[in-house]
Image (cartoon, rainbow, N blue to C red; front, side):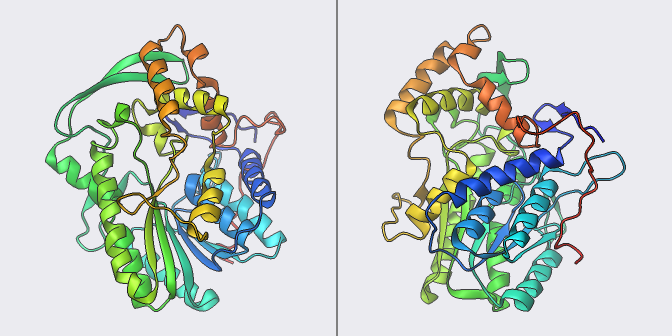
Length: 396
C-alpha cells in the first residue's frame, strides 16, 4: 500500500510505518551517541508510544539499559486503514530492543481503567518483580472514571473570560485572530478529571498495594508552563487547572513515598510539537517563533534530547535542582529572558505576509508530519509498504 499524509486540522489520519521506524531509529541513535546514564533498572511508562513518553522509554532502555513496560492506547491497521503512529513507533522500538537483547513489553489498553492497571501489575510480578521508575505521560481527550463510570471529556478553553489571540494555520501559513469563549465550571471539572493528577495517584496506589513498586522508587509526570503570552489558554485555562492538579498530586505522592526513600516530581518541559500540543490554539504560532529563536541560539531541543537531559542532569544526578514549588525545570532554556524578549517582539510583528520570514513555520510543519512518519528524506514514500505490522510483545 502506498501511504500519503491525510490530515484534518491538527490530526493526521494516516501514519507511515517505515517513517515511524526512521523516527524511532533517529532517537535511539541520538541516545547511543551520548554518555550512558546510571539510571533505572525496571521502568513502567504510562503513555509510552509517542512524544515525551516514547522518548522516556528510549532513554531508559538505550542509555540506562533498563527493562521497560509500556502502556498506551493505539489502534492496529484495519483493512486499508493504517495503524496509528504510536502503534508503528512501538513496533519499531520493540524490534530494536529485542535485537539488542533488552526486555521490552507493551500493553495496549485504557490506562485509566482498573483492568489495565491489574494487567500491568501481573506482568510486573511475572517478569520484573518491581519497578523503580514510573513515568506518567498520558494525553487523552476523554476518560471513563474507573469508580463512578462517568465519561469525562477534556476541553481546551480559557477560564473566567474569553481569550483573543493571534493563531497560525501551519498548513496554509495564515495568521488570523481567534477568540475562545470561557469554559463553564462543569467543563473545568471534566478537564481536570481527564488531564489532572487523580489517575496518576491511582496508578501509584495500585502499584504500592500490589507490592510491585520498589523501595526508593521515583515517579515523574510532565507539565508545561510557558510565557505570559499563552497563559490565558494554557496556564490559566482548563489545561492549567489540570496541570495544577497534576502538581498537587506530585506533592501528595512524594509525601507518601518519602518514608521509604521514594520521590515524585513534575518536570516542566519546553514547548514542542507533539500530538497533544498541536491541538492547543495559539501554540502553533508561539512555537514557530520560539523554534526560530532557539535554533538561531543553538539551544533548541527535541523530545529525546529533553528527556536525556532530564535523566543525566536531574533525575540521576547529584546536582538536581528544583524550583520554589519543587518542580524540575527543563524549560529553562525556553524561558531565558533574551529568548522570550525576542519571541515577544516577533509575535507583535508577525502576520500572514511575513510569517515565513519571521518564524520557523516550515520546521514546525515538518515536525508535525514527522509525528506520523512523513517527511524523512531517506524513506521512499512512493513505494508499497506493509501496514499490517504486529507489536512483538502483544499476544506473544
